[in-house]
Length: 272
Image (tube, rainbow, N blue to C red):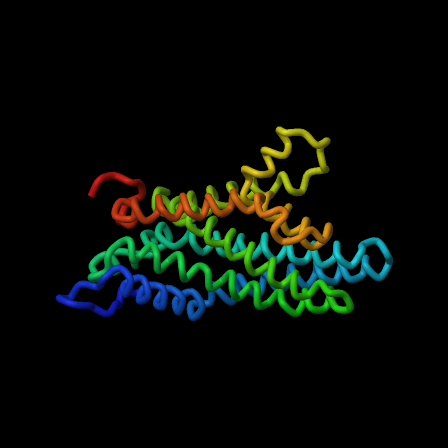
């Protein structure tokens, strides 16, 4: 981030205008610096390999078509959120280490506008990942009335989860003492949230269901499966989206409240 912003009235940028300015500059830096294209290329390679395996297993009757589409959508959401988290985890701590945060702090932009702009910029990577996933879903879902629901559920759940974890990533990035710590902590958190969805199913119980519902990643993937594989109505399993929604709201609120203490030249939330 270069720190170049447009000053508003009296040389001070209001929060809404400042957020738009920061979001625009951060988005340009993300894509023009090459970080965005590299992450998107890695995402497309992984998605291509998974889609090929799903299509092959479908032809061999190892996978039903709904399961193949579900697998691709879940991977697109999970990995799309992963790259979004990677960008947000680097947003503050990375700028500290690259020496670009100081110029941003000297600009007439409220610090809440800075974190809001960074949060919005991180979402451009998720939206680009979703755009890459569209043709894969179209190929696997052709011939059945599944393409529309698959695209819609991927966009809605992926955006909700991307906002939630990007906010968490920014919080970690602001508190972390180094960029390495921020990235490692964020990836370990995502691994801890994603791993339960890959374990063998356990016998139904109130405890196992509770663990699913309080995990924003696992509950989101469970909702996708309910809509695409079990063909449940969209509204019958909305309770699975409570966890990612609460995470997005709470993490976003904490991020905005703590912004003046997070966006500083040293890690932590010490008083200004």
